[in-house]
Image (cartoon, rainbow, N blue to C red; front, top):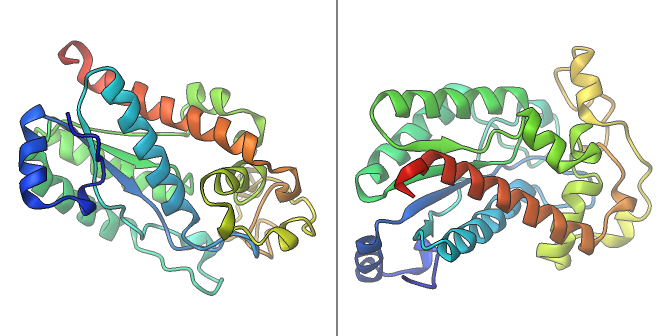
Length: 250
């Protein structure tokens, strides 16, 4: 069982050899969108890739081979479209991309896991629709639906409030790649109510929801220690989701 889990760094012959173990494929789904003045617009991509790698390692510990596909760096980011650097897809385009990527990959992998950690409503709709369509086509596919009550409760109140570049996400970047956090800026930012409060009131954009600087939550409460804990929890969610898909086949 290969120790290198990143397909993008492997040669085709190495991949061909790894496929003999019938691996699960992880597809990290990121985004290009505003994450406050202190985090990069690639924050979701960084997190999805790191969580995918950790989940793949956990699966290997259970004797289930797993490889990580190159991350999809774009998604539905309509709520942050007013901010520089945000690139958004339509739900239809996202669904078509996922259908093509998974359709091309499915015949080579035991299953495909869509690792989507973004909770913007239209993004969730797009990934959910794509997964359902792929399943109807006979593919073994699952996705990490973090809107489920079981996962929200596991991730805690900060996540549940609709943290976006607040303590939850900022902690993860501080743990995964601290050099990408503008820490002096982070320490100066005032707390902002969670995004979900604005969504419940009908907000369609970050600005409508009160996030004029592109973040929600309290970045000053972030820590690398919390980031490690958050990453481990997310990796466990992906691992459990994958094991539930495989069921008795695991």
